[in-house]
Length: 520
Image (cartoon, rainbow, N blue to C red; front, side, top):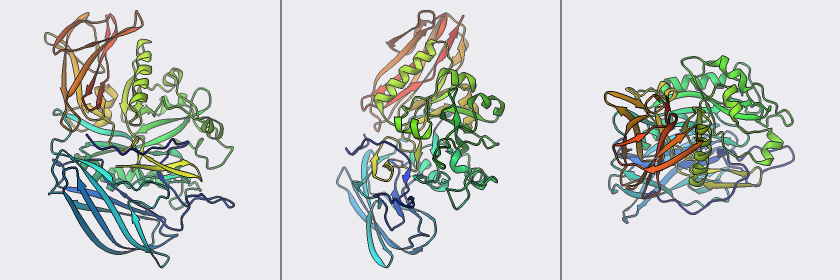
């Protein structure tokens, strides 16, 4: 099981890779440094069926303010079997640009699969004519504990024609006063290393309307938006699909700001109500009731983390609110990004909320993403603006996945049908059949009796299958009944309801299916 270090702080605001330099005329952050942001990052798992090397991402940001001479990087590796190595990479690079990104590929051929590799990345630089030694990153106050990467030969336990991806991810086109993400090119490499087949680039609407060089100024020509679309199109491939998107700040039925994932949207939707770009001006530019007019057969709209709890501070300062059933109906939204971070208790609670919606007759599908801004191994972000930083593993790229079935790696049509599951590792899918007739997840079955067949898979990385449950939801009684399932099993289907399933492994990894609805 992947090693999870025991550090964690309770943040008031969790955002992206931390921007250290933004300040007010009369106030500098306590974490301000007269250095560029210097970050190393690695994938949290490495699928050896996809690559022979461990990709190491190096990011140096704001070196135009604080130029550095990057002399060398020393990479130290140690696994749980005691194997260790050191690789010194001589670079001799003068970095003086706003953004510098480099991928290095570390030889791990001597390391045994199904083990954790611990990695430290040591930078040797000079900044302002002074020598500078940095371990893993230069964010003050963080632990500097080693990166942890699980090596696996098996890859993800997926059947043929099933594709895993991350539906909510922020790139370097998200960059503002408090956060920034990683570049798309590096993310493609990390996705391959993780075993992902696709991901969505969903940068903030209030960042995509900025000028190229200044996140405090807007540009009506939308150069960042157009550049993001172009780069996603150029980097897209059949091996790793990239869906360009936008996380829109938009008004709910109470006029509060909520977030909406607009995928493959060709027309920019303005939304800077909760950007904090101009304090006091936080009224949404658009409302969810306008979304139906933006819908086309080619795009898709998903409620972003609709069950996230909004803090009092965000309610007061950013006019942020919550999603409701009325909002889903106004926006004609039937797909929810229910899982946004790796928090088991919260996920279980949110699944229960979703089942309440299902028992009210709402045909809502669930997806999973991580809201990662880079964050391939450790999430290092601002906790309290201008005061503290924090680190955790809750929102890591590719940790939770949306997995769909299709004859090709084409995410949007498959997601729209509901033939998908959410998982942080194991696989579970099911169908209902009778004789030659068959109904898949997302479809409506008209039978009163049927046979439920499922496909459940796992690997040593995720543990053995512990329990598989089937859930029978009956709208007429308003109750959901859970029972363990043996394959196949004939069951009485509710006249008006649904069937769904879940899986838990011995290591605590989980998969949830979307429902098959029933109606007689």
